[in-house]
Image 1: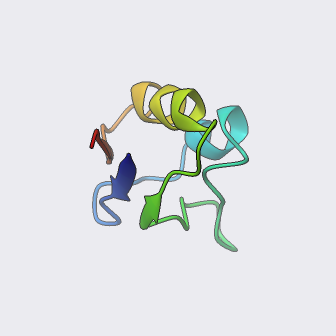
Image 2: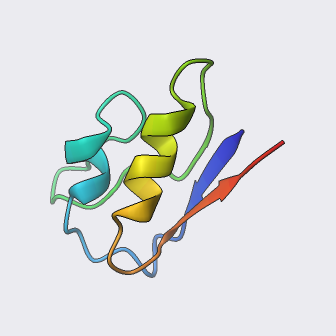
Image 3: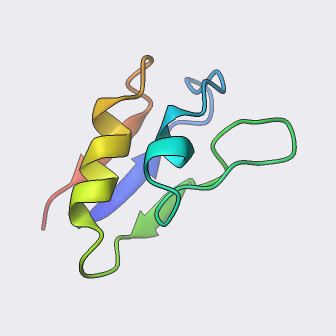
Length: 64
C-alpha cells in the first residue's frame, strides 16, 4: 500500500497527522509534509484513517 498527498489541495487541517502520526507528519506551518510513502506493514489502517478524515480528500490510498 502507498499513499499520495496532493500538496495543492491540502489546506492544513491536520487531521491526517493527528489521527495517524506514525504515517503522516506536518511541516512547519501545519500542512501535511508527507507527499508519497510506502506504508509500513501494520500501519495500513492508520493510513486509511488519515485519508478518510481529510476534508479536502487530498490523500489517495493506493492498495497494492
